[in-house]
Amino acid sequence: MQARMNWAFAEVCDRATNVDELQTAFMREIRELGFTHAACASHVDPLRPPADAVMMVDYPLPWLQRFSDQNYAKRDPVYWRARRQTLPFQWSDRIFRAGLAADQIRILSEAAEAGLIDGITIPIHAPDALPASCSLVIGPDGVDPLNAQKATWYGVYAHECARRLRLAGMPAKPVLSPRERECVQLLGQGKDDGDMAVILGLSEHTVHNIVRRAMHKYGVASRMQAFVRALKDGQIRLEDVC
Image (cartoon, rainbow, N blue to C red; front, side, top):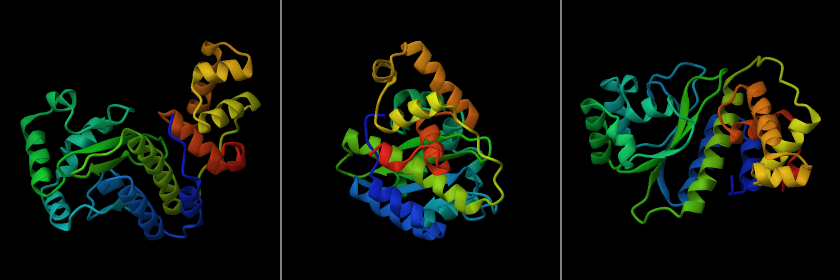
């Protein structure tokens, strides 16, 4: 978590009153980082999404139509991989492609013909939301690694904001302990377990377990998601991490 969040972008997301506003802000930001298209969305048919789906997609319409007509959501290799891991992955990665079936390779080839040649996907896992991910299509000039890290922040944050706009009547938020709040706050400052151990006077093992407890309370699969949830729930403050 070395890249820091662009809090101006976060404030724009927080002020959004609907998903369309949020999508406009998100797409503008990721293009400035060197990506050409994005799909921050639930793993569903993009043209026939259920009411509780997050759907911020600006892929070419002909590709979305083909994806929907062929029911590719059931076999999409990016969806398939994102549901099985928590770390971001690149579509051109040999390890990713090595585990795919022939029909999944064909889907990637068809996507490339539609202009979606290579990209980075950030899996998003939460028990109170549909399976989702944020896929960012890399432009012809490539993307700076730091910008890719920033885009990961933006995708997770935008998805969480869209999720909250979509869903009403959310269950009561979990309560973090003071030590859990400290650790999650330090995550937002880009600190790793070693940094936090020094700052808090604890062992790295203890810090790791504290962070895992916070993640478990929120039912999320990544540290970044735990931080975003705590921030959105008001358990940590923006001014404490800037």
